[in-house]
Length: 235
Image (cartoon, rainbow, N blue to C red; front, side):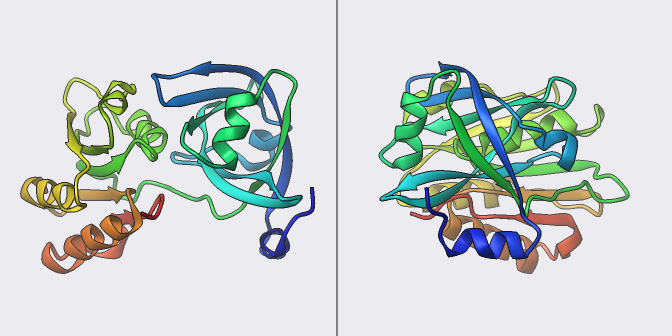
C-alpha cells in the first residue's frame, strides 16, 4: 500500500508508526464492531492518556487512507487495546467487517494529547455522540471518584443508545436524538452549568462542536484551559 502525502507530513511532525495485529473481533450492538488488537509496542513506546487515539491506514485504490480511532481499554502490561468501528459505508467499516485474528493494520501516533487541568475540575460537562463514546468512557474512567460528570450523547438511531456508557452513580447521562443539528445544541445550552472549577469537553459533529465551543467561550466566559473541543466527524 502506497502512503499519500499525509504520511510524509505526519512523519515530519514526529509521527510514530506501529503495526497492529487483530486478536479478536465481535459485535457491539447492531451497528458497531469491536476489534481487540496486539499493539506492536505502541503503548510501551507512547504511554497512555484519556481519549488517546491513533491514525489507522486503510487501502483506497492502492493508496493509504487514514482515519482516527480512540483506544478502548488500553492494557500496557498485555500490549493490547480495543478499537470500535461504526458499521456504515466506507473503507474503514469494510475492513472492520472482514477483519479476523491474524490480520494486520498500520497505525500512526501523532497529535493525540490530553491531560486534566490543575487544579482538578470539580464538575465535568461532556458532549459527544456514538463516534466519540470510547473517548467519553475513557474520560469517565479517569475522573477522580468524587468528581461528577454531566454527559449529553447524540444518537442517530435507537441502537446507539444501547452502547455501554461507563457512568458512575453520581453522573447524569442524557441521550439526544439527532435531528436537523439543533436539538443537541439546544438541549446542552439549557443544561450547562458554570463555576470556577467546571471543565468542558466537546467532541461531536464538527459544526455542532464549533457552535457549542463558541457558546462556552463567549456566553459562559470559559477560558481555553477549561475547554477541550474537537470535531470527531463532518456532516
